[in-house]
Length: 452
Image (tube, helix red, strand yellow):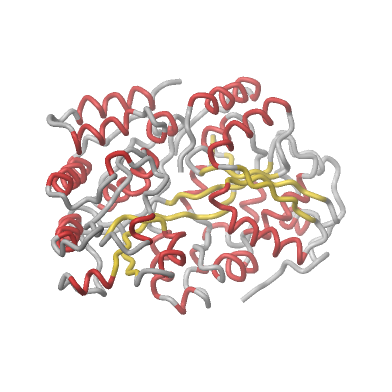
């Protein structure tokens, strides 16, 4: 696990603001009854600055439910899940959460400005790849002891927990998981003579199946599609193919890129061949992520890596098959994305904010809200819940969540997600360039990752 030294908050806030100015953001119930978790506030419990840890017994595990109004910020892509969770919590607790949904492109700037003025909300989410940076800068209160006290702590998604751990201290819980999986159009598979019940199990099978879909030569239909000008889309969908091949994308500290390895180069060459052969849909080269899922959703793409959170939406118009993202010779993995949620350094209601967080990981929230809504649960012991059991695809997605990874790096945004990131340069050179520059481009990524 990485060993980062927490930076002084003042410097960190400045860094967050600077980041916001220079980087483009991407891309069976129990508990929860009103009053059931109320406990007297202990001395110091109202201030979250510095730490929301501490305490023992029932009060420490559940926090306080005394009718306090809490504020919570989230990014727009998670609006559906956030609204459902807040509505359920408000309907079963004395505390009330006021939710603010912020446009994705404005979120980093808004957090940066609020952090600088000491006006962060009680609770705020963060794209899980940003959490290491923000946690190391002291924007979140320490939740280490509280998380350890949860009876199901060892079942919480490891990728999110690890990403929110700095110097051994834990700062966030999983808010909403977003996984990358392979989705394919069963109708097009049948028309192409492919088995509609079997998605690609290797990288070569993915290329072969996409090629056969393209060979149908149906107007507007392509074999596959990807965000060729979207760094965030590419880490979300291509990193798992490297992991499934038994290789890593970075070293353990997130300071060195390993994207010049043999598996990564197989991914690049596969997409280059598919592009050269006309298998990839028009527009992929300039796709910034704004419309990268639209073609599949409209039934015009045969097979492609896709966000699991959009399964329900895609299924409204397409007969969707799901499989894990394969490695070169098999295996399966996923990018465990989504947002983590923690208590801000500025909250004066840390005990009440913890009450929401503790409830967030309960059966009531995970099963009766998220799973019921077709979303991925954050606890492995709830993977085969009553709602997922009705759809084998959801069971598969929940199981894949336990096998995936969340890449951790302090400079992740600038190295990978930014529109001018060296990662995007590497991919575009490898897929669209005439000469291979993978080694040099990989070194450029390392240079950014290693910056202090």
